[in-house]
Length: 215
Image 1 (cartoon, rainbow, N blue to C red):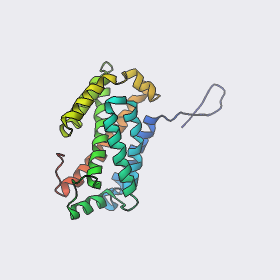
Image 2: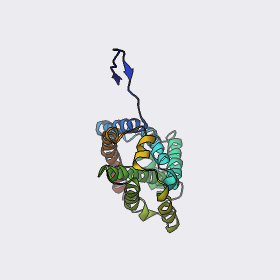
Image 3: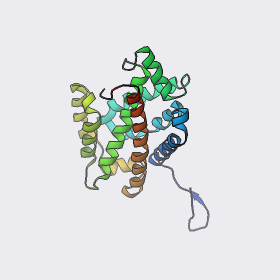
Image 4: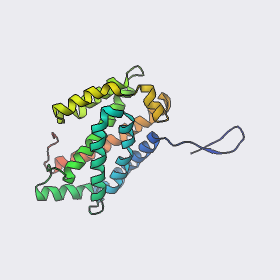
């Protein structure tokens, strides 16, 4: 995007991590609408977009360090798998055939955890946007309780709860992301919408193969 300046010389608008993520998930959602139902959801495209989200976990600090480490590892596993499997449908079908859907290090399990990471950020953004007076700590606590806590052990939940005290303030997070409340709002809404479509598509693939979602 080129913006004019007072000297009539074009300057390039700065692309922030949040704008890059929003654009990547916009592209993913359009891919789903255009061809995924006929050709499948390309695993390499999903991995590329998901890899960009790790910067958001990193910006949250110690509170989500466990989630960040797990998320990055699982995205890496799926990126490696994308060299052999073209679509997420492929990896699910192979694990279903082998009876390894819920086994440790299975690609279906990795995909389930990556999907959970996307949903955590989606829920966090929804809480973040619900009020300008809503603290990041409250937003993150609510999002974690909704998305991840039901599937984590007591030890992990306790560690996350303790880490909430180390979260940056709302203003500090926006500064880390090179955003303002105003500039972040539309990008977060775009991610919420687009990631919701991706999450829904993935969930329907599990359900269609009679795989429960409560794990």
